[in-house]
Image (tube, rainbow, N blue to C red; front, side, top):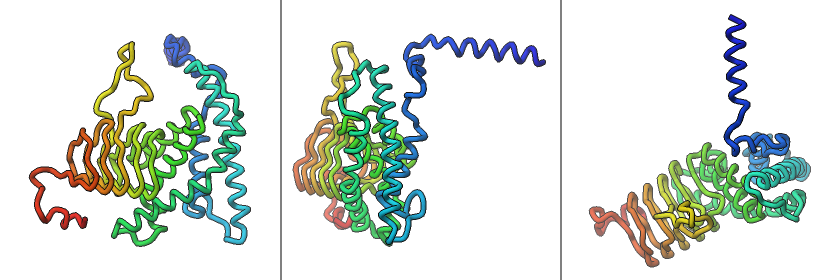
Length: 303
């Protein structure tokens, strides 16, 4: 039995070791310089504990020693980011044949760390938006602890910042972490303003080139997606083409609405549930399913 087992195990290992697929084989080039999912997950937990001390990660220190507590957490985050940015740039230079940037990983990580006060400020506006708009929310603390929107937006706002700093791959990894955790799928390229609220959240999709203004509220199942893809000369979807909606300030989008293509939803508009929109919507509009258009509809929604 041992001989037979050794035989088929050895045969399997020999086939697995071939790596006929060139793309997969590249992943093993200088293995110690690959980005680490586990280390990036640790970085996200550190970030959450820095933005909302006591709500995430280790128990927060008393206020008198909060400065020291945050110092330790920020130092840890900075160290992880330096190594992971260095690794991911090396990975990107091999897989995508890109040259290494002139800026050091230390400088990029430093610039990200310097954004943390602004990240906290804008995430607190998201907490306020949920509290002010959800009668089920009993406190701001409940929102930070429990609401998937805050977890998703913490990841997104960090990922978006890293993307703007020119960091490859890591922003997408961070966004997919919150996607798996919350069911909310936001591409790190999406630009989202202040006081943003996702109510419930499951099944929300926000595409790469979306631009969302301030005081926007969306509900579960909403898709802000592309209508079609422009193709390059090889017949593949073209990259970096604006293809997702622009949502202006003070817009409410109810559950399972699909807003597709590079269209604009004007400010102060309401998009009803389960509608399908592929054209611009003027400001102050009410886009509802035809059978639901009644004089009492807006009253029923509390608008």
